[in-house]
Image 1 (tube, rainbow, N blue to C red):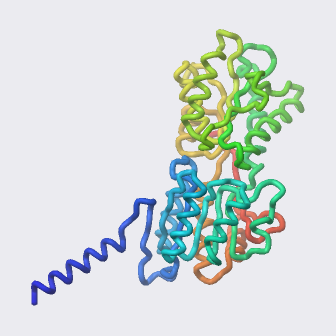
Image 2 (image 1 turned 90 degrees about the horizontal axis):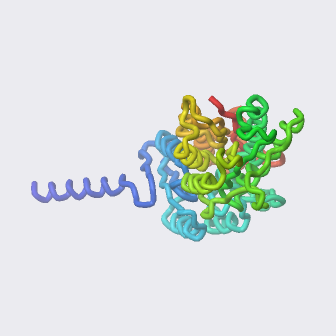
Image 3 (image 1 turned 180 degrees about the horizontal axis):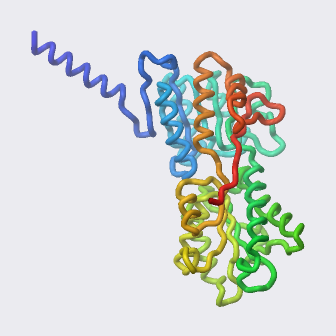
Length: 377
């Protein structure tokens, strides 16, 4: 009898370990049975785990969901929309009842609708990456209280970065103008050709800087390579990567230098990871090493911990804070409200009312913006 009891206890322990274990697709958390949110089973679908900013959001969101006692699992879409759609379909089959989706194909109403169709009536909380392109506002979100979006106002970061750059240049113009020709030459690194955040950051990061400069009687910025009519260098993988920023800047510095009189005098990047890659290339060439070394101003977006450290060390000049913790808190609060019986739209409106850091997009009850903020110190 004792032997049989021992076997039964061993089997119970095995099954308990299996029930609480993680999975190869990402982090997970089993909700305590006594939790008020124990009926929730949340699938969180990331466009890719390797994105530096989203890694911060993921860490914060995992912690928030776990603290709330909500069962969840993270899924890595590996930057493939087909993969993400299959993951959503499998999750629905496996009993997940709230879907939190960081869409792979940003700005694609078609891709978003495929996710909604696969959800088969389950609430979907899209976040961070736009689900509607320019001129398509409301195509997905309009009149659908079961769907919501939590992200940022796409043009805001570009406007904020451009203003920051223009004001910095006015205060430091002669020091930045290395060849003394009266104008500032710049490089622009773009993260993704189809992402609306990248499009607006590329546009307004330069346009708004030029507006500040010309209002003060200074000439507009000059793109360093006159033969490049796009006036940006694009990450070929759409990954906003450190490697792309480093490769671009290393290649540029092989031809453009102080010795040649055509040195790039300003670097603008769509995100901090690309900016930091550019800084590593500059440091290899003897720039941006702090102290008395010549500093090429480099600006990014996100205010990641690594970027803030680079700014503190005087390697980087400025960035725009994209509030990872604020986004994670908004998502978790919306999920909890959905679990308590709110529609996705009502949950989003309640989150917007909870903090000045959150606002609803004009004309929407189910589209929430997390505020950006400039960061230079």
